[in-house]
Length: 128
Image 1 (cartoon, rainbow, N blue to C red):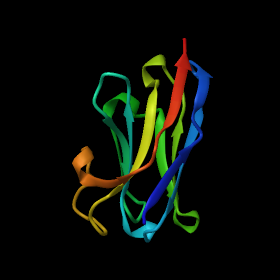
Image 2 (image 1 turned 90 degrees about the vertical axis):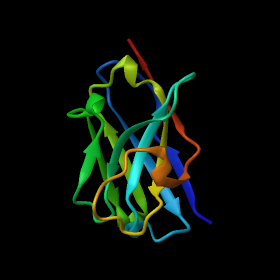
Image 3 (image 1 turned 90 degrees about the horizontal axis):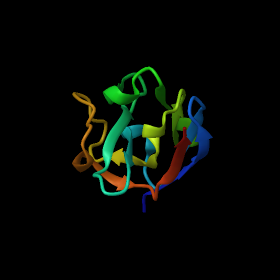
Image 4 (image 1 turned 120 degrees about the vertical axis):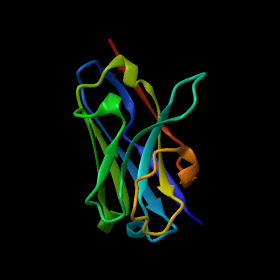
């Protein structure tokens, strides 16, 4: 059974930083692309960032480019989202997810349907 557990969320002032972690189990972590999404009340979950299974390609939504870095540590079965220069608009529940496809090569998926396992989410609140 695949499990993803996010941690690292919290309350931070605008301009601050947080590092979110996603601990994975139940699947050979290094064979799958990983993604981070976020959701605010009343809105659909939106893509934030993703990293391919080999760790050499990343993809970000425009709103976070230059402020957010996704990386992975396959030895720890973990993915991370380093978020700097946080803005109130970044306030959301953040979710990590694993790609459905084994070693997907051609593209990095930025839609929910491309991911099959999700964590429970971690709340990030940025105060102004």
